[in-house]
Length: 445
Image (tube, rainbow, N blue to C red; front, side, top):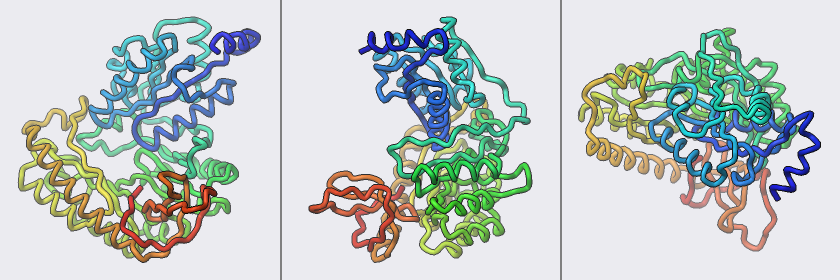
């Protein structure tokens, strides 16, 4: 098979070098969007995206660096796939590469490291690697604060029924524990014209639900004194798009004015992943978060008033340096009071180059585990309470797959629904149908 592929490419060699490319993606929805965009760019250049690393001429790893374990997973995956395909070219891109270029260069047998910029040039880099047979290349320009938003093609893995549209990049907040502003640069946004064009493109491709995402999504439009509601309104105006969903949000800039405007968007799904991190004001201050627990609680109350039966989900960090037992108890009590539909609980992970990495008074590993366990228990209790509250609701469900003898889909607030297939094998994929929820055996996206 390999010889046949090589033979078929000989005639192309003088004009272009077509290659099979395999992607491995780590981290958030933004990375998934960018992988799909890079794949589309390569496809337009005549390359083929394959689903088998053994068949690939090039292995691309789109990295995350939100925690130390993200870095370990990247190194492990590179080593594993190198063993499976030792002749393939290896490209590293993404946040880990941009934030820690020297660490990226230290990974053995890498051919190209490309940070979080200039992804449209990937076909040119592939051509250079193949034609010149060079040693490792590096293309990681430093962010200067004047970058513009890099718009990649509107593309999505065909296995999905929801399309993900990245409309914002970068972060200006510099939370003391977070490396992302160094990995992504300053806030910048996709133009409203491009938002409309890409939403229309996804609609024409048959997608009914659009998920808007960004590094700090709430800062969409900040450069021109715009706001996130404007992007939502644009996407909701596309006739083929039936649902618009927001990915993770920071509390900053989610003002009463923005919430009011969002509440007028009938297609907006009432699910808000609103990052908390801590419910203790002292810890929030040390984290350099720009709100208090009381301000966060008011924001949640406002969202619930404007969006009845909405799902509020969150990120919850335990064991930040200097977090006392009293601080933790205050934070956990606040999380319980908020009755989140879902909580992503995680331990603090020091990132070199951040302010918090220099803080004293680290929490012991044993205490981290204890606090994780207690927080996960609260998360489970809140989650079950939310799911039980959904019983009896009549809701529209976008079905996306068949699994375990069931049609599986999700409601506007993100609750995953399963309906037995019974005697019918007909797929309901990409159909929106109304159901009445009868059981608490549910999940949340």
